[in-house]
Each structure stands twice: as C-alpha cells, then as structure tokens.
Length: 242
Image (cartoon, rainbow, N blue to C red; front, side, top):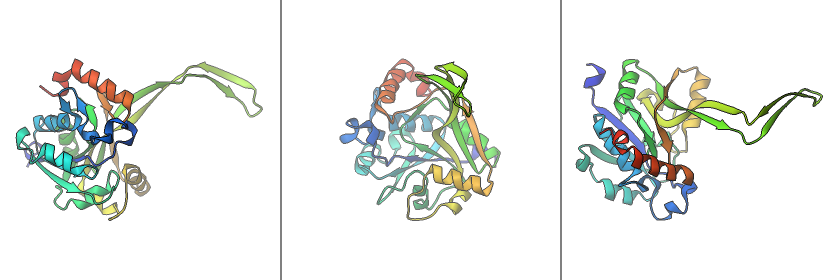
C-alpha cells in the first residue's frame, strides 16, 4: 500500500492555558482565539480536511468542554474528531500515551499554529522514508538592539558588530511521529518535546528536520496574535488552502 492510500490521522495539542496571551485567554482557551472569521483551531481543522486527513484527535485539558462543544464530532468539516482528555497537564508528548489506537505514523501539532505548510506532503514524505520523528522547521532572523563587542582574554577589543543579525531554525510545533517513539515516553507524568529530543539524541536516533520556507506563526504572544489576525485577513485564501 502506497503512502498516498493510507488514511491520514492527526493529533492536535489543544490543552494549554495560553498564559502568555492573558488577558485574552481568561474567557476563551487559546485554540478558540479568533483569527478573522474563525478560531485558530478551526483554521487548522479546515487545513487538515483540505489535505485529506480523515480523523483528528484533540488532546484537551484546560476548558475542554468549550472545545468539545465547538467542534463536536467534526462532521461539519468532513472529518472525524474525537478527544483525549488529560486529568492534569502532561506537556506536549506525554498526552500521546493516553491515546490507545494511534496508527504507525501520524501528524502531531500544536493547536495555535498558523502556517501554509502542506500537511499532506509533509505526512507523505515522512511515511515514504519510514521516519522515526520529523520536525517542521522555520528559519527565524533576529537583529540585536546593541553594538556587540568581541574581546580577548585580556578584555582588549578585537572586533565590533553594530546590531548584528542571527539566523536559526526553530521548531514550528508541527511533527510527524512514528508510534515506536512512544516506547521511550514515561506514563503518567509530564514529558515534553524537549525531553523527547534530548532522549532521542542520547540514543543516537535519527530525527529528521524539514525546513519550511513559507509562512509560519504561532499565536502564543499578544504581538504575534495581532500579526496573525492581520496576515490571515490579507492572505486568507492561501492560508485556508482554497
């Protein structure tokens, strides 16, 4: 069976409290924060449906009932939606241990990501390579506000840079996961992406990184949230894959 014919499954992490977005998230959970006409999580669901995903599991905790009431069984979007409820917050990876019927490969992503990444192509490449864990990554550039001094061991100036720019790859909060990864995840305790990466690196496991040169933003901070609203209004057709 080719990768294109396999049913596509996604797990969305939607249990966070969104503390960095207060006071916006006092009433609404972060995944239900509106981006234009839709909550950010609905944008994600619509994108996944367009990319051929047939089943979505939402890992929920904080204000889970609001999320469940909004999305129901997913039939409105032509997908099957079910829920995995955490009794207490488990971070980003441990919630997977509560889902008993995960397929051999599945998409895992945060519920507050706005991107034009084609999830179907990302899924198919990982499955074709029989990957263990694949991270979608975005290039970020930051310019320091200061003049940077380079000194030697005697504190003599040897170089100077006025507001230098740094570039680095960052995780987009979108991953393809092989079910065998769960063998290293402890049960019943917090265990996040950082813990998993450190454990896989220590084991010498191959973790692939897939750079994405398109659009990506998470809405975790007020400035990013306001930018996401503006960007979505300016380019909604591309971001809704329509």
